[in-house]
Length: 475
Ligand code: NAD
Image (cartoon, rainbow, N blue to C red; front, side, top):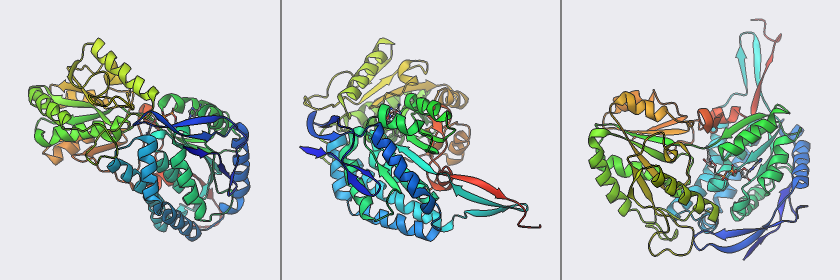
């Protein structure tokens, strides 16, 4: 049993004012593995005050000082990768290969920000004006459980690169990962108050941060419903807001695709991170005249997808993070059946032989219409919907017929054609014949998938305000 009873304010580990104890679970066993003492709104206010005190001097640090800090933070987090991998498996249930990637990603985003800063100009010219990119102030950074360490480090990296100080509100369900990351960040020896980390409930700590007048910026990753509530409460104090929200990403398999490669790739896109990924490709759009082939390949691919012990290197799908998430996935599978979609693989209940833990059966529905609930709402589990189209124009129309627009995939053996299709899809990212991540490219969504972008110079500028100074240049 682990007990985590400290938060991090003003450069020190302190006991929270809040006294609620929250159970932490191992999702593979559904057993309690520890407890975290949660911060409350008073802790949030103390953290914001510390960040506010640190801002005047931190915002004036120069680029080289911040590059140096980011490199120290990277080295410190990188040194804890093994421990972090273990925590991600134990506390979140990610399969080991995914967990290792997540832990490495948490470190590498800090180095990416340092590299970006090397070539970023904070001062430019626009006509006769000098344009200075000025840090916004105190930033509130709120993360979800499905990639907690990565989002803490990614958001913090951009804030630090920009010269903002921060209050991080990690997911309350990821306290073990948060503790490891916080210890590492502390070891990097940044000035007190530059970052503060307060684990607490969203409706108390998160809400206090998003309403507080001394917070200038919110960067939030999580559900669309909570994102909208943050946008509303931030409006009162006109905070700058970056929202990374949900998705219902299409995987467009063009009729020239090599299906033997494309179908397993489409399934991987849908089942990534055990289906608990905002970027999961959950709507598989396939040409009507190749449906039978797709179904047969998909059935085989699901049979070969191992669900179970996240520590087994052959496991592709681990458990859902919580009972609530397990129930949610079951509910959507039932809705799919009730609305008339046909089960091609999987279905309700637990996979055979997995009686403990929050495991679900990897599920593929076919005969899905894009108007069905399972094609419109984010399920956040390994549940895919095969939808047919007649021609390319209809494929694009279905791909775009969604409230979301976070990511899309186009699979084809003709790169130029795939590129042309990609140009007509409304999504923040379109991946052609790949599932690879590009940390230097902007990330974020169209429509209900969010506002703004993270990563690269777009992500950095989300923490900066341009200021034009006129009268210093004659021409
Ligand atoms: P969530 O919205 O329930 O919670 C996210 C965070 O917000 C948590 O830290 C939570 O405590 C906090 N929160 C909850 N209520 C709040 C409030 N009223 N005010 C302020 N903060 C509050 O999401 P989740 O269940 O943790 O994560 C799953 C969701 O996140 C999915 O919808 C998924 O698509 C989305 N997500 C999006 C991205 C992306 O980059 N677009 C990445 C990962 C996850």
